[in-house]
Length: 148
Image 1 (tube, rainbow, N blue to C red):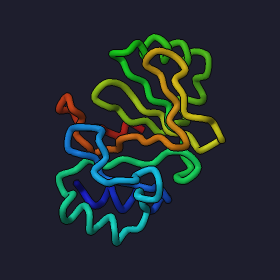
Image 2: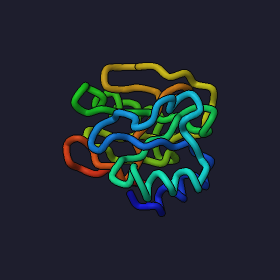
Image 3: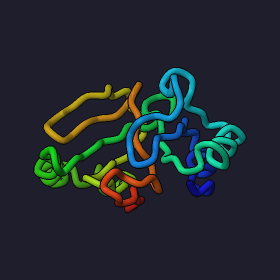
């Protein structure tokens, strides 16, 4: 894992934790109950040592001040996204976006929104949830990448 990404994410105040390579399985226990951290010393130790080949995820919600709209193409999220972009183009233009192995993540400031599925292939990730970050490798072999 490139420590430049880890340092940048920690500087945003994001609480991070390692994910098993090419999976969405956390490598630490209690990732959502105090295990995720923004402490750069701990993160550097993890990603320079025993978790150097792991992906990185962020604990979403109030703790990291982000809510993420998770769109999965394979589960039908693309048609919902196309309609939502027509209805609310400004929201999608302002969002930071990550291309995943199967869709997109749209990052917004935390607003109290709850984690939930809002349509097939469309989820809001907030308090108690997590999202995988670039440059983690997706199970498909593609790399999560920042688009905007």
